[in-house]
Image 1 (cartoon, rainbow, N blue to C red):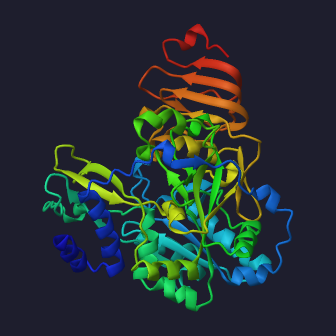
Image 2 (image 1 turned 30 degrees about the vertical axis):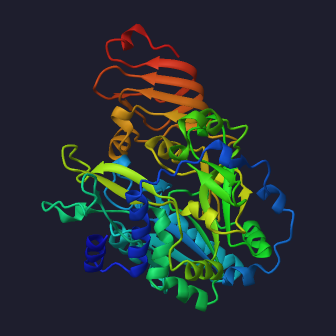
Image 3 (image 1 turned 45 degrees about the vertical axis):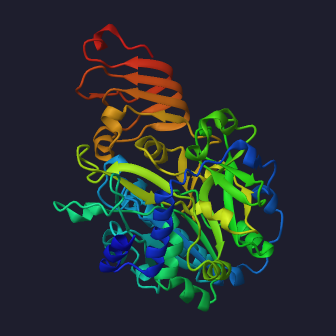
Length: 471
């Protein structure tokens, strides 16, 4: 650990960051598995619901907002979608980026309530410059505010064979990795921002991902959080069959605290129970509410470190070269902090508060007429359910490839599903209704004739087109 500490200090990282890494490293060396058997937890049967909270009066909105900060996690590059800049700078709706819509939401709330709710972006060393450059041109008033940026730490990669700091002289930056969004806590502490916010009278912070436009500042949730006096509240949504592989909320029997159990924490013999969505009903949306004075007290009582479960990812030091030396990347998840407080809570929210854009399938749907932008710059579904979008990964996985083929996203407002196999070029004037499959077995893009396609299968493979498409 001494070598890691020297390396981190040389990089200018705070003591809080070093202490958080030390805890992770100690868990790695000790071989902590993190497994949580079914017999050690109980399922959560019932929780408060946002729909029920909306019948309660909010009270002093302006006073509440004066004590509130909205913090967006903005450290991701969207590399899985082929992006090289901050993912939040991707145009998603009506030519506006995630960041444009988020900034407009803050400005709308301020104008409507007359209260200057705080706004904070948690950037990474990879997204900081691009984000600030963009904001300085498009939303200069926000970027010039105090403490608008919290920069997350970086974590040294661990050589998988020696458990010493990984080295990669060809590109020393590859020796570092993001520490996961659980780093929000040591970043707040180590930067001094936590103390500054508390001293400025900020009590409540709403934290969510910048690529989840459904995660807006909800006044009913804010009022509930303030009234309960809880340290930490997690927004959860109901699991469906599509979510059975993902983590769930549970209660630990040993101390009665709420906790998150991810798939990697489940012993093989308990997989059936883990995937039973009628038993374990709720998953974490990563929309969190944190009481800052209570977080400060907790950190002071635990020597500046929240004991979050370790997430151990095995990679290669150069992620683009599978022959480079194997390393461990040590991460934590911010939602895991729910188990650190004895008064944590959770609220069941509608699925629309969890609408992250993780793939080009999500982006394709978001750019369609299935979603609309409200006067408050929030993005909401225009229909009860978003249709399933399945684009061919070979041709649409990367944003630039999708943009080249989707000159105009078709109308999906009456669609149940759209499946695309092969390179299909979409142009203005196309509508999808019901369940539609469109294919092209050739490697060259073929333009889909603009019209309405309803409950149909259309094969546009050039050699087959003269034989007539089935529509």
